[in-house]
Amino acid sequence: MSWLRKRTVAVIISAVISILSIIVMIVRDDEQVPSTVPPAAPPAATEVPPTTTTPPAPVQNDTPPPPPEVPLSAGTLTLGSTFEFDNMRITFGEAIGWTTINRTWHELYGYEAFYIPIAVTNLYNTTRRLSTYRIRLFGPDGLRLDEIGTLFDNDISDWGNDMRSGATLHSYMHILYNGNGQYVLEFDPPWHSDDRSVIEVFIDVRR
Image (cartoon, rainbow, N blue to C red; front, top):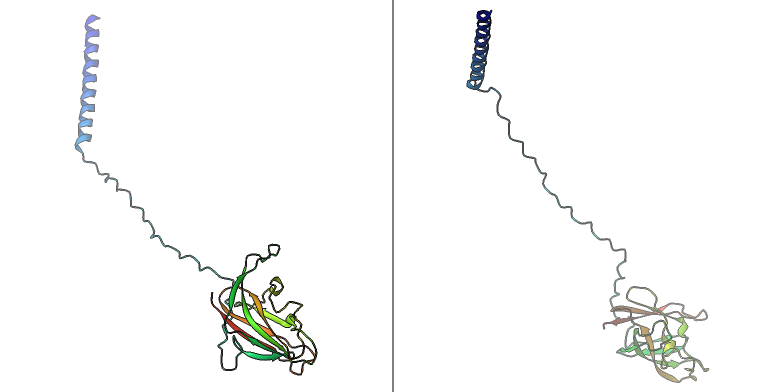
């Protein structure tokens, strides 16, 4: 029995050694065979689209442009002109002056104004005064200006400026300053006038 056991152990050991030898040979063969798997390709570069800068949209200006200035032709009334309106002979001075509204209680306090010397002769045969409420004032933008004559003691609109027939009054017409440009004074004749045409006087103002 002892011999048989020894023989069995020897056979088992020999079998184990044979199996190990086979395994070693298989591993060596795997190391010697070159790999047929191609190397992994490098990651493709991500294409960045070119940056396009969108130009800003043009800013829309809703403010309409001022009306074009009327070229002064021969016969156009302006500074220094004389004309008749509602049986009054009116002569404007040739230069304007500057002042500031100093009525602290008024909403236009501190605003600039300019004034025009004016001479008015009463052509009626009765005592009268110039009807300034028939005079409309427009700024360079073509919009009507606020009347400010009553804010000044020496303005032609003063209710005390009555004239007897043939008398001449020397005074001033004050106009609210609203930027440089062409100001227009419209004289609207009363309903009883023979000529109902509106008289326009153009004043070019540069501060």
